[in-house]
Image (cartoon, rainbow, N blue to C red; front, side):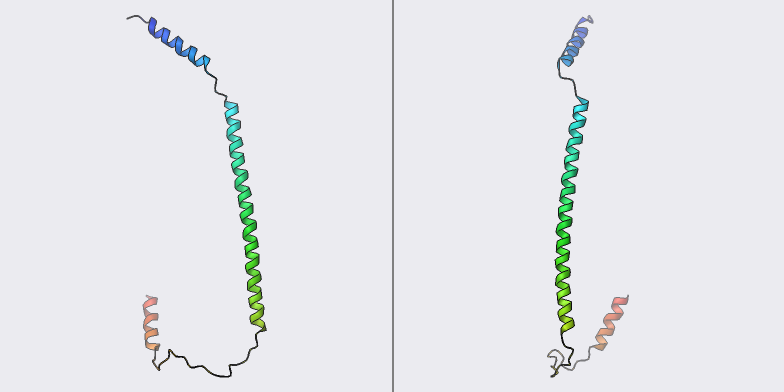
Length: 107
């Protein structure tokens, strides 16, 4: 056994490594930072769009609620001229059942 083949293999590996392109760490770092920067910019743009969209939706909802409240405030406050009978009330007293339900829900 001679050590010469091992040395020749080591030299061949070194030559192959030297012939291959060297890793450009700075270029890789710049590529990663650029990709992360673009991702962050797109997320910020999406968040701003969503925020603007939500604000306009909220403004529309507040406008509708304001209209409803104004119409309700303008409604005359008169007592009904005719009392309407409740078709579901058949003279049954539900107070006992209501008390039982309250007792159950307090437990």
